[in-house]
Length: 156
Image 1 (tube, one colour):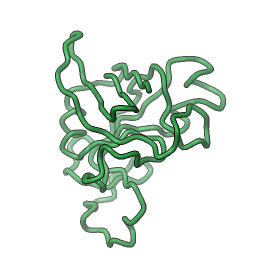
Image 2: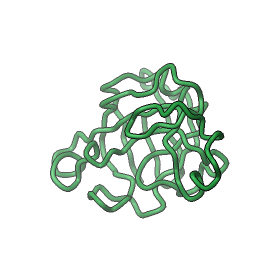
Image 3: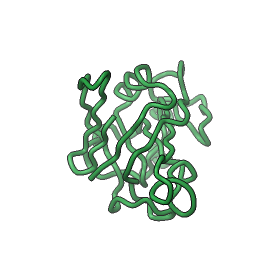
Image 4: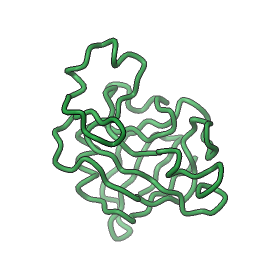
């Protein structure tokens, strides 16, 4: 996969052939690999964990555990200004020592995911606190195609 922060796209490849391009959202802040920056990290990553298989579309996750609630069931006060983690989670881990792996720049330790959101109408805008956000049906579709260990290149 190639995530382009600037164009707001995630391209999914199989055997070096482009299968599909998805519209995404990344951080409201400038790209950054540093802990506490809230920026989307750059560089070569891999999927270290796939979470949420079999859950209904729109399921809300807290601490990577399904809450049993669809985001539409939550009051507006619990959704306003918050990007909920919904539908599926692809947890990313950096592969470049000192760039996005270990120390103050460890992508996995920052809990950077590709995941669904409760703000689907805003996909394409800078929206997250570092994660890569997708429409719920899109992340479910992508989740079924990828495996742990698959590579993800995040670039400007």
